[in-house]
Image (cartoon, rainbow, N blue to C red; front, top):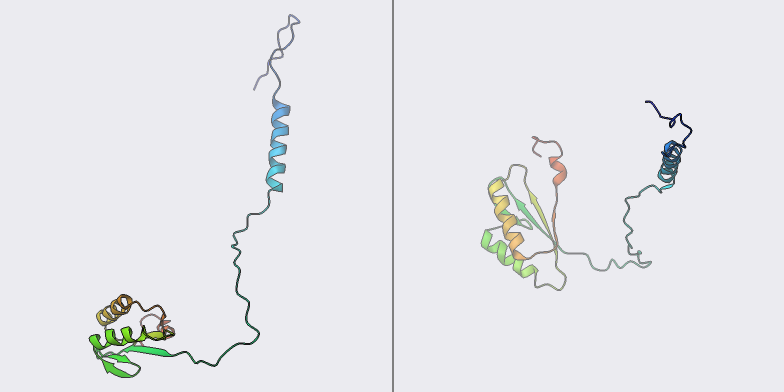
Length: 144
């Protein structure tokens, strides 16, 4: 790239040399980038502190729903139908402390029945719900 040094007639050069300014700007830019603190993606959460005197006087009540391969719905080991399931779920909502509802279909239970029972549970308004026994499905394609 050619630079003109002005005219040979002795008149001063009217264009400013910006090369040193660009060099200074790049050095400052690098310094600013180096001094920026590392971005941390953390969220501060105030966790509750454990109580020094835990109260284990009350054993939480749990209800377990098991779906069998024969298409039966078992409520704590007793066979019930879908209407009785709705009644049992509504009854658990009347307790002072809502019991935990555990859902465990057998490995070869009907998917259609599982979907129907989950819709019944969802519509009942139960808030303490959990899936149990999922560890038996760790390897895909192996039942139980």
